[in-house]
Length: 105
Image (tube, rainbow, N blue to C red; front, side):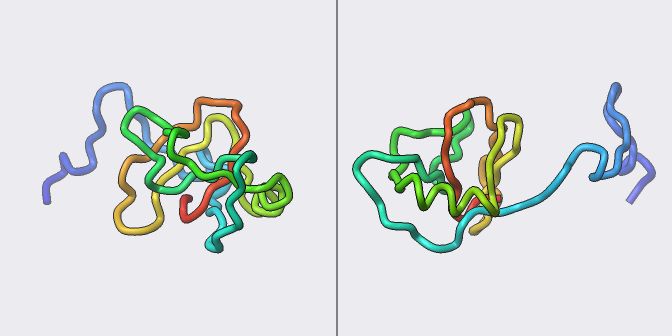
């Protein structure tokens, strides 16, 4: 391993994780009851190369969403990644749409 292993691309700088990350949390590990109309529940299969895919997300009740959000509220600008298997397609949340996460960090 040479010294260039630690060289950064031009314009990059070294930072500590606490400088760029306020917390790491994960979604529910339980499967809430699905409902016809409600709040989308995002899982790793909804993390796509071009962002979040809500088209196949199942819905959960507002009460289940609120319970999940106490532990794992998602905000615009957060980075989501799969927690099962590989990290897959990390996604930056670029929407104000309300949703919950399951098996996603």
